Length: 257
Length: 257
Image (cartoon, rainbow over all chains, first blue to last red; front, side, top):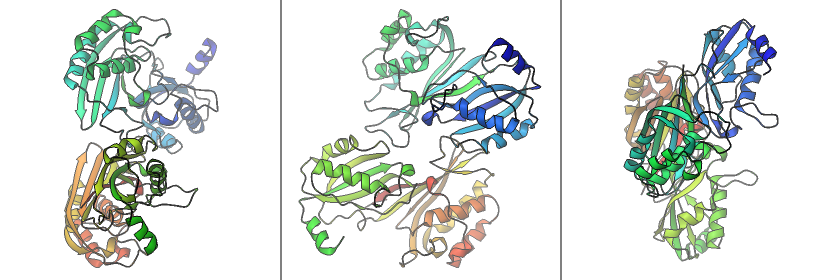
């Protein structure tokens, strides 16, 4: 958005904040794409425009990649439309395809930005264990057929807690920004054949969670020791870490403001 | 199958039993359909033929309708093909689309029939509660937006235990067969926003589980009392029960021999 256009948007009467869940399987990520490529943002903006009667430009807490899911993506937009906030979810959901659901809508201060006001984010990653891929979770988890040493993975995972330079887990070629982030929680839970890894931090570099998970699975398979995982983190070198875990296991769980 | 064709099949050297899981979302049920309509059986037979090198005709424990899923459908087929039984799952799964998975293969006696040897079956039905449909379970559960009285549903569900004439829950226009069946287990479990109903019986009439669930949800919403549910069962009249619950919540959980 150009600056003057941004100012024009902000001059509108209302700033609406939405919490949105989506199954990312059929989308090229969250961020708006040129048709015929479809992103969640394209669909959501088109339906909101029908309801609010003005052009809608969403700002999101952040992008999600193709195939990545969200339980609680947060977006905001400026509008002069008059529909009461309590009626927004039902109105939008009645137009949206069933893989995108608006869970909540709220009036926000004019200064609220889903992106810039975010204090922290939580991601969830699901790994499906078992000899064969589970047909019901093929779009919702990463199938790992070989046995995993869960205790070793937990030990390694603890290394990311606190403040670190996460360059080792940053996508090569990402935008130049500080690689230092603080992780508040990093937990692993076993739920039947699923391993669920929850990571809560003040910010995440591009592909950071998926690069951590890719390396963690190598710890689980005994190819990297928990201590080796720590050494990789401290090396601040993407080449030391393992390949990026697949998109379909990743969920933007929530955004905290 | 005509009788002589059936005898020809049975003259083959091996009778192989498979346990199969499938996501029924993209299929017109289990039972073979004429192309371009695709059923799970069409796909499974085509891939087995590639591996065994002879024509394959599957017999299944029973049909499942379009959109209905299976964790443990059981099928058998006669073949002269020589692939060792331990190698079958991996070989077939490498050819199958990722919404169908062969979990197990075993040599069976010549007299084994997935259909006729079945002693009992277990079905699972999933109901998703919450104001809005969960985008991740839209193909895997029935979304019921209004609150449900789970205790009333449990009380009603107990009425089906034991031996009953299930005519009230039988699809109108089904094949003429005895409507008497025996239910060994009927249990309801709450798992987060999901209600899971497990029913184990010696056999099921067409649409029986979905008709029971449709009526049970009306109990949960207070439109039918638990006692009223029992009266509907005892009426032996399909017109007394509620509409059929949707297919996507239903799973053939297992077949017992």
